[in-house]
Image 1: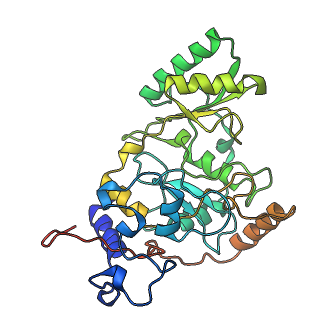
Image 2 (image 1 turned 90 degrees about the vertical axis):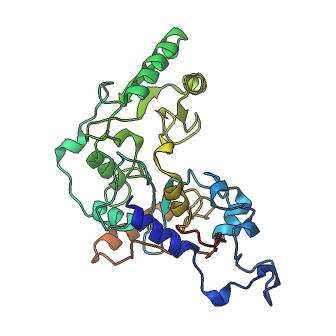
Image 3 (image 1 turned 180 degrees about the horizontal axis):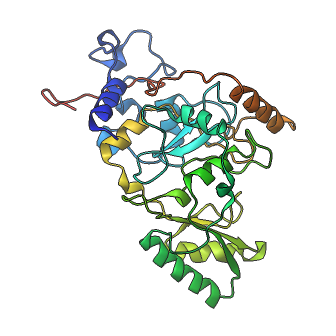
Length: 320
C-alpha cells in the first residue's frame, strides 16, 4: 500500500470539522448515550497503538455503530467485508497482505467484485492442484508433519486442493452469484491463491476430504501442529490454513480499521450474520445479483469515509 495514500486516508479518517470538536467532548451540549463518540477513548480504545486486531462487540457497536441481532465481530482487521446496498451478495476480502489477489490500481473492492462477476473465464479455471510443491515452504513443512500425524493416528484424509490460481478463486466466487450452483465462497483473496515476491505459487491453505466421524480428530491434530481451521461444524470442514497477518504494517492496519465494515457474512447466504432470511431469500439475492451485473457498472469512490468519524489527539508538532 502506497505510504502517501495510507497517510492521506488515515488523516481523512481521523479528521473532523473544528466545530465538531469541543475541548471537552463529554460537555458537548445535548449529547446522550446514543450520540456518536468523538474520541477513541470513548469507545474504550486508548489510542492507535492499542487497537486490537479483533474488536469486542461493545467496541464494534461504539466505533462502527453496529446495531441489530446476531453476533458482531470481524474475521480479522485485515478483512474488509464488502457490503453496500447496491451489492446484493457481498464478499469478505483480505487486504494488506503481499502476495494475495487484489483489485486493480485505483479500483475499489466492490468494483473488483463487479468486474469478476462480469468476467468469462477459460477452461483452465477447472484445473485443481493438489501437490505440495506450490505451497509456501513453512506451510509445506507443517502440512507434511500434519499428514504424518493423521496417518499415524488412523485419520483417513485425502488431500483435495492446495494452490489455487486467482482466476480459479474468482470463478468459484461467481458460483451461486452470477453462475449457477451452490454458494461456494465469500472471498476473492483465499490463502490458496497466495504467491511469493516473484509471483510464484506460495499457498498457505489446503483442503481435504475427511469423513464426518474423523473431523474432530482432524481438527484437533491441526491445532496441535499450529494450523488454523474453521472447525468441524463449519461450511468448509476440511480446510486448514496458516495466515500471515503480520505482513501488514501497523499504519496499514490502523487505516483498515477506519473503513466501514459489517458483521460476519455467512457462507449460506452471503448476507450479514443475524439478518433474517425467508426460505426463498437465497434465490432472491441471486436474482438481484444477476440483474445487478447486467446493468452498467456503477461508480463508487475507492476511499470510503468512516461510518462514525473519531478524531485522534496527537501531540503538538507530531505529524502522520
